[in-house]
Length: 87
Image (cartoon, rainbow, N blue to C red; front, side, top):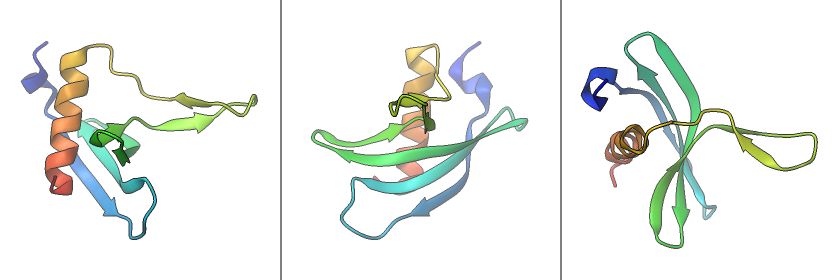
């Protein structure tokens, strides 16, 4: 399946004020059928990037709850979200 067949769309983008590393929260839809909540736009040492949704484990570490299996899909999600953010 090609990445254009995924029909990705930003369904919500909420920009945050302040000096924290997290700049926005975002939700995306896939194939007009599934919504993935909780992506984050983060300011890293090399610029903005998109962090997948994650949750804290019982051990106190953070674990991604959504993991794109192909790099092309990850790149397409990041491109889409950063364009919606205005980067």
